[in-house]
Length: 347
Image (cartoon, rainbow, N blue to C red):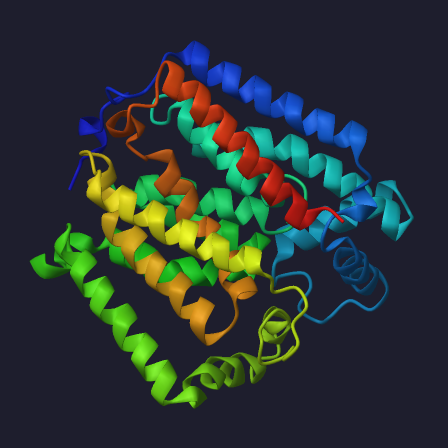
């Protein structure tokens, strides 16, 4: 286990602070350009957020003040400033973009991450986290911050987890991998390091076979969630609830292949820091693929940022030679990814 003082300030592949801050500035400029050229009402889930806030204001559930309290109070506070529910959601959309930049710096600090990491991350997940997920975005970033503390067995990691849960209940999906990461030194040697990748492959294969032989496996998680009133709303994107789920598209399958390839690349290109979170990445990947097969691609997509953020933050780009002319091609490829991902969230 790497101790807090032994974690290097910057790895050999990290570029200068200048490159890092130039990337941050470029991301900020991109968000500003999107604001000037798009309408907040055309982004995905806007109608859902309007209905959510309208219910929160006029027909609040009994648990509104403690279940996802931070995101609820945040939206109510905006509504106190702007009485219109629709306008409140639009204002929250712009605040999200500003908040995204600050959360990005916290989760991708220059002493740990390179410009490649933050640029790649923004292009693949920025369209969703900076423009769509008004309540879940803080939870994703807070879990990433908790991962960096859990890998050093810093108890403050659980404070971040608790705060993330108060923003969005989906944080529970990151809890089992977080427990494995925090207590990994107590796990058998076979469940640590690269050996765990073989266990993941066996587990995923077993899940595929079981799902094919026993289709009822896919309905069991839905039934369990439906029986809990506080959690029932989180199955809205599952194929069980929407058999003709129009929000599931080929892009979700493309994204799944991308996640698998990125995870494999991470596992075969580990440096000393990346090895510290391998158990978290592997177990989270299993949760993602399990949800993809047992619930729906859309539900799985909502879980992916919990492990993609810390994995991309520590990704060893130096082993792929991202510099010089290759860096230029890398930026072009990221730009294409951004356009593709943005097209999925903007109508």
